[in-house]
Amino acid sequence: MSEKMEEMALVEHLSELRKRIIIVLVVFVGGLIAGLFIAEPIYRYLTETEQAKSFELNAFSFWDGIGIYMKIAALFSLVISVPFIFYQLWAFVKPGLRKNEQKATVRYIPYAFLLFILGIAFGYYIVFPMTLSFTTTITKSMGLQETYGITNYFNFMFNLVLPLALLFELPLIVMFLTKIRILNPLRLKKMRRVAYFGLVFVAVVITPPDFISDFLVAIPLLLLYELSVFLSAIVYRKQLQADMDMESRYIRVDEED
Image (cartoon, rainbow, N blue to C red; front, side, top):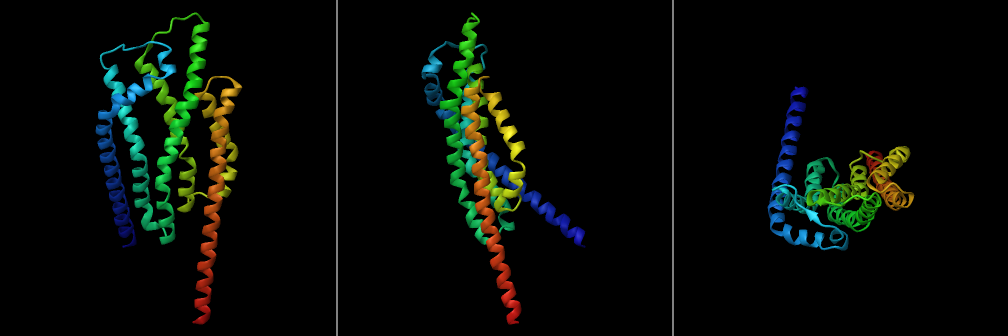
């Protein structure tokens, strides 16, 4: 009987998860459609900068223009979908949280949007120009003729900016996982060496191969991890205090009985 109930509970959880995923996909598609209407002004803004004007961008296939508009629309849709994705995740795990944890975790949703925007800004205004300048300088020093496709330019941009934007969500994700008792600061401290290696590796891969560029990107990523550990510790201490208070209340009730 218990096995049957467990199977029913699993089916209910999977059905709930499927419903949340469908809702997220609907929102993403809606954002994608809206993004197509504003793709052109975003494209104009991105291609009227000094770095874009420093060389001529070309189309090498009939689908390049449409493909770029679709990628811009997809990025726009992702930006507006991030807080909604966090909300659906919160709604999925909400039944397993205490009331105070439900109220605390729902407050993370606006910060998810803010951190994602900060990650995009850091990637686009700092990392992307620095990396683009380095690569074009090397190309010119080799005496090569620069002929870039519009797809090459935007793929290069998005491959730098999007991973950084996602990495900027790290503190919030860690706080959320700590709140639902999957992570804690002790585990994060044990993982510090591995995490540092991974973040430094990401910084080295996405930046020019010189120490200054690696340093300028690696340090913010490491600070993000340390901020995650710090915030996790705050959440964890509050959890321990809440558990102690609840235990003491149970003890008092037992003594009164």
